[in-house]
Length: 401
Image (cartoon, rainbow, N blue to C red; front, top):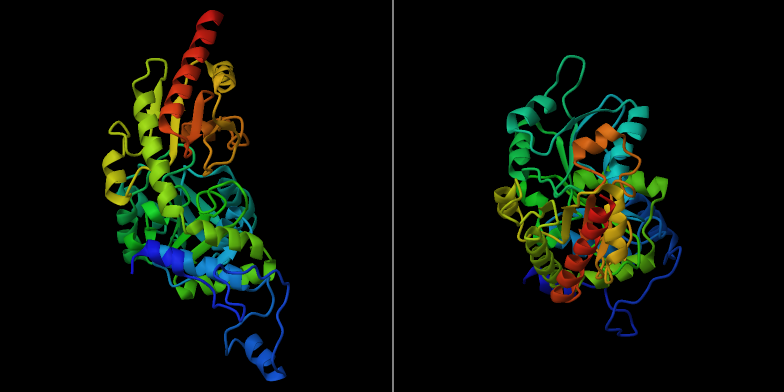
């Protein structure tokens, strides 16, 4: 049976009411049929629901679907994507451990590694996404007082620079050195990329983005092998970043249309990127499936399509950015992404505003960078709107000069 069929047909067991759609299990706790059953549930000699902070049928259905899509044994769902990222690290790392990470990270992931884990005596090394296999290997090995890497963490494609990391290469190094390979797969989704197929241990998602796809709920998930999910689950159960049953129900229903939505997202994004790439007043356009992307061949090798994010660079600083965004008629101005509606933001002043100037420079985050989360609107309307906004903002800058 194909994954798309399983994503639609996987459901919790039907109740005595013979419902067609999975019902909402809005309950904080669950009853025991006997004292012995309660004892067995807490001893984990049998499986079952005890308390919705631990598990809930709606959450289980969502986790089962994502595990199926990613080819993973088990998973744990969380209240947000960042809770999933944090749990995937905090549940597995201890004081004295070392983490090697790709420099191109979402701002909050960067803060976890540099500010929170550092307080626990967990050190880190950053590498560029384009680092060679030899450079990755050197960073992973023990070096003087620095221990060998316990974990390698990365996003591919990255936010917002759309840099890619070679998953097959890191899979080879993982097999050699035995570190935990932890991949944020949010931008690609399991429809476009399955990191575990390349040797990754964990795949992490902000389900808030494409898994929901309509900007309604927050959620996160980590999937991987049983032996790694167990300590992550222990951490999450006892620290409490639980996914609500309602959000899990919403996300599980949304997974039924994920493949269809990603097809439209990707076709729209590619067409918009191609159109803007030809515009004389756009300095640069970056999209993984544009031949001009520096890692185009890698993108074609490890992704089924280029994703839904396009970045463009407009010359003229923040004044140009303001004029461009004011001229747009269709897109929403928001720091979120992964919605059915096209969204634009200026990472320099929003999602990555807290980074230091040198950190922004290393990630290619300039004053004129625009991140476009391409939605499901008709592509002709999107292209026309972006082209006119580019022209209007260019005129504003020329008038100023």
